[in-house]
Length: 161
Image (cartoon, rainbow, N blue to C red; front, side):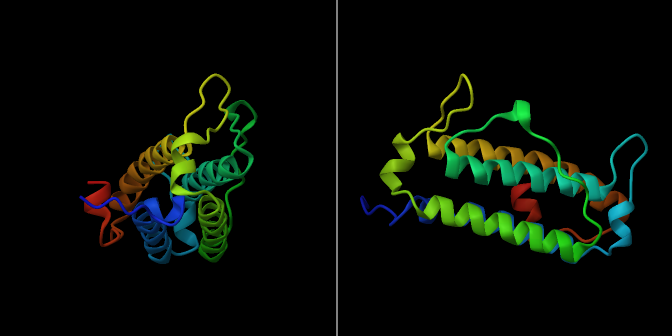
């Protein structure tokens, strides 16, 4: 049995975080700026779905820094105008997430909690909840990408279906 622990919390979840980041980049790299205005009847534009994802990811990244998360005060960011803007936004959020999680030991990931107002998950549980939130939005993106006839990221099937 291997009892070696990762050097920090990020190293313990790196596989998942990197996979999500790679898939986000592949989705955005397969889009044009005009694609961001695509909508399905009665639904937000693709750009607004990406803005939701950016906002959710930003809120979780911030929660790993402040150890607080309050969805009652969450406001979805405005949709951005270009795919380049989205790449920069997601790269920035990913860097913040990686930096925050790298600041905790793997053991702290099991004991330090995030105050969510009535529920206090450990950092590991908070990351698991973050991953589920990302996958929910990836499911939405899957519908849009298929409706548009866009290629899916290479590992999409392993994670989204």
